[in-house]
Image 1 (spheres, rainbow, N blue to C red):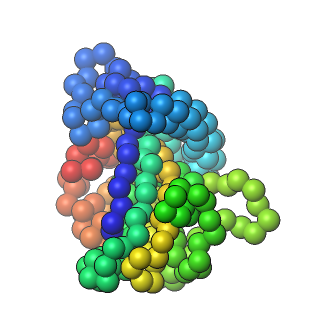
Image 2: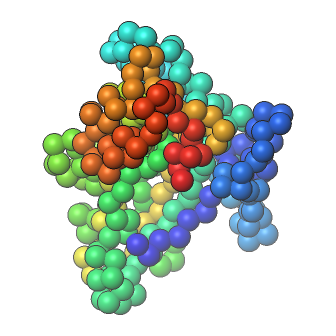
Length: 264
């Protein structure tokens, strides 16, 4: 959708350092960070400072979700989600700085169907999103001249809603549910389908920037089902036909799924 992104681990430059002894570092998740320190010397310390704080907020939400799941599922293992949403220095979470660029031509915009990011769901447990900001060609922040541009989500009933920072609120963060949490919660929570709508025409003269933190387990860890539940029962609660099919193709006796396999 005419966007670029920069990934980094929230706490360390070699994510493999966060793995237990003896666990192989799969390159899918554990490639070293590369920082543009020469051109942007302040990026690393500022991004890291923000990322660690955001992970801690995410862990607080994970504790609340654990409590809610324990109220619904009598045999839910206490602390399951908070264990999988590990502290920054021990985690497999991924941060992404994202910039959505203006379309250069009408043909380019048409090729992406006017979307900066097409409708999709995240794979992990929870995604933390900072509200997007808009920048002009000189990098100065501005108010978006097109109010319909930005983040949209679809609820379980199919209604599409634009997500904005509430009026009168200073700083805030958004959370989205990922497909992994749909498994861990036994289908209580459903992955958030979302997209980012682009400008109504090419050459709008502005870009959109944001930061996302994808909270997820390590590749070798299991996404456990609530005690006593099966994949088929979670599938029955799924609204997404493809995701339901994926769950039904898992072995009938499975009581969880490896996260690396889940992502593949």
